[in-house]
Structure formats: C-alpha cells, structure tokens
Length: 260
Image 1 (cartoon, helix red, strand yellow):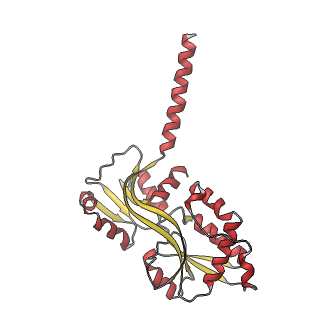
Image 2 (image 1 turned 135 degrees about the horizontal axis):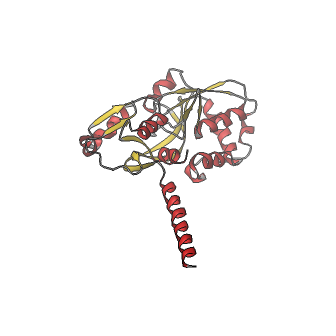
C-alpha cells in the first residue's frame, strides 16, 4: 500500500513539474524599457479614414475584433475599438479599390511574415475590413518612424499593422489608438538575466538605438549590439538558436512566441 501511495505521489510531482515548465515558455522578459501604443494613421484629409472607421465599428459590434484578439493575444481585453451596428449604412455606395496598409514587422503578433504572405492580428482585421468594403488588401512593410513619409508619398494608404505613431503629431490623422504594449529585453528561459558583455539584437529602426541611449546603464553593460532585419520571427529564431543572448522586442511578442 505504501509503495502504491509513493508511486502515486511521484507521478503527481512529475505531472505538476512538467506543467510548471511549460507555463514559463521558451522565453522570458528580463527588463522592461518603455511603454508604446499602436495606432491606425491616414494622410490628413483622406476620406478613406471614414470607410475604415465605419467598417471597424461594425466588426467590433459583430464580435470579430474580440475573436481575433482571443486568437492572437489570448484575451479580448488586449485591444479596444469603438462599436456600432450597421455603421456602414451611413456611407451609401462603396466603390471597389485597392487598399494598401503599411505594417511594421518588428511588432508581432500584430503583423508577422508567414512564408510569402503575412498574418497577425492587424493583418487579419484589415482583411476582414476589406471584405466588408469589397476592397482588395495589399501589404507594404514599413518602419513606424517613417509612417509620415510613406503616407504622404502615396506608397501606402494607411499606417496600420504594429505601427507606433506619435499621437501628438499634426503630420497625419490618427483614426484610433487601440492597444498598449511594453518594449522589453528578452532572453531564453533558464538563461542568466545579466547583460554584462552579452550580445543584444535589435531592429534597424533608429528608435531602438534611441531607447538604448536613454538607458545608459543597459547600453554600457551590453558587450555588442547588432541591428538585424527580418522582423520579430527572425529575432526570436536568433535567440532560440543562440546567435544572440538577448533581443529587444515587446511583451506581447514574448507571450506569442511562448505559445507558438
């Protein structure tokens, strides 16, 4: 009897031990640096703003936004959009067109390179918007800090897809700011959190260097800072394979790659 109880106890410990390991995931946050907000931006005076606004309100009312939030973030509380039934009826006839959004690939899971295509919360929501409007969606990778140039050159119609915009800027019109996130330094789970003499991978945007400059204690401790392209999947792959010790990413990206 005692032997049987001992075996059951060992099995219990093993099961719960394994569960504990999986909860932590492959990656961990070792330092939070800055808070940032994701927005949807348009050229000033562009009437496209109104079509996207109405379509998003309908999708929010119909529960599509919540469904996508659960899929990509695990909670509908992650994002916030206004809601309105039959909002598009106010606009009347909607002419078909191509709609080009500029997405920042550094900010998964809002936008992710998926083979030769793109996926992510913002991408799927933009597709749902275009389906409602009868438009064709085209995706153009950009850097958030270059959103004004991309919009005013006509290269994109809308900055939307993990895009961090200056909410105080008068250079463009912001439709909505729908999500907050944290910029963090991440490492593999089980690795030391010490930055001393280690390698840190960051994106190519000037924004990342500026953040590190503002955090001199971190910049001075890191042994090497390398700027790489490819977006969030490339950063996490580099971290997983040991090509670097740390990456500069977001809290939502850490959560996403811990479960995918």
